[in-house]
Image 1 (cartoon, rainbow, N blue to C red):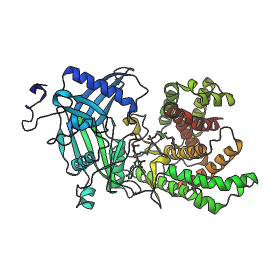
Image 2 (tube, rainbow, N blue to C red):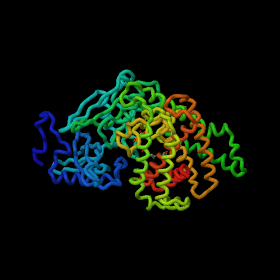
Image 3 (cartoon, rainbow, N blue to C red):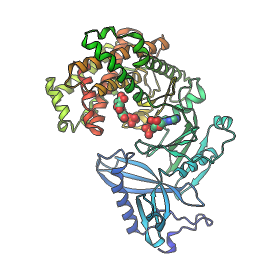
Length: 527
Ligand SMILES: Nc1ncnc2c1ncn2[C@@H]1O[C@H](COP(=O)(O)OP(=O)(O)O)[C@@H](O)[C@H]1O
Ligand SMILES: O=P(O)(O)O[C@H]1O[C@H](CO)[C@@H](O[C@H]2O[C@H](CO)[C@@H](O)[C@H](O)[C@H]2O)[C@H](O)[C@H]1O
């Protein structure tokens, strides 16, 4: 490979040895093909169901410009649904010498035999985490050929962490996530986003607002971010927060509580005494107390978000009927787009025929019910606010004595603009109620067993009541909730139906065997 591959003109001190520009057209084509074959095996590549028509390398930027071992590759994927259907992804790379890499167990993604170099995915390399941390804390910039990455850090970081040392490597958290995360010495948490969208990132925006402008403390405090500047657009590519020491998420805890509940409830059911379930046991062992904490934290989050006066994009506004109509239309579009493979799902078909529905009659009924709920809301205009947007038991961490709320990115399938919109707080509340239902119905799998259905329904209804009571007690008469019982439940039901429609689509695409859970709930909500 000749010297033409090394660009000495831009920065004479640094010879760029990056993947992107030290390639012949044939090598570049081979590298693109290798990446295209690699993507379907990656959890973070969320577009597996779409056909790729083009993959282009956009930019590669070193995290360590002098050593040039670690870089971030930005590549654009175009799908067969037209030129608009594109996504920008980020892939962290480590450059190695070929002989060294051939003796390791890591998959070689690209190689350049002339230079005896190769590139592997660097996500799980613990050293890369340290480079992310340094970039943010020292507010460093690193330039590529077209774009640059830049770190920025909040005042809070310098105030609280004056004696930070960079001895700690970032410990990679595992691959089964939408993004890639690193923990530093149980102190800091860094998330590297893999699918990038231009503009403000809802997560960094909400966490910095809550940390810097409100007293709400049950979130990971915002410490800093890493941004990409490319082709005139800005992308948040990484977020640094405080680490929240925890014993696992709410989902894990709900399932272990359900196990304890099952033992007691089973016996009571056989003696027809389920309604006499001991209050204390339910409270302490069966998630009752957790539901109180969760209701209170949700309310505090919403009150903090609703206190944003004069902050662009956060200031509460009265809900308009047109907002709900937009969501109604989106739900119907979800059915058109995301339920397309429903006829191939055996559970979907079976449940529909058991309940005397066809695809057509089900869609009509959903549409009719959603419209009814909008009408039932009458002239109520509770305030809409910024919300969590994808609120469920997997998004709350149990610290041993309380819950912290994490992952403010919003629903992964929605565009950033939609995720940054204002919505009624009850949209989050409905998300959490759906999650309680998921926990109960996935624990009992009650499809063909009426007694399991009774056990699941009893736990769910009790938890819902406890959660809602705790939530409403904290929110009191704040304008984020409708003022009458009828309109409160009309709006809540609207969001429960809308969420269940989303979930059926999500499960059809991601976990086909889970389809019965949201589908059964949806049928109960509309019948
Ligand atoms: N600040 C934090 N402190 C400790 N652990 C965290 C923190 N944020 C997230 N986690 C852990 O990392 C996991 C993934 O985080 P999440 O924000 O859900 O990432 P993703 O966007 O990849 O879904 C969570 O389930 C939780 O276990
Ligand atoms: O956590 P993500 O942001 O990736 O959210 C997506 O995946 C969730 C599943 O991991 C999915 O949540 C659904 O399943 C949960 C149980 O696994 C349940 O608690 C949620 O209530 C239910 O919606 C979420 O919908 C999806 O956006």
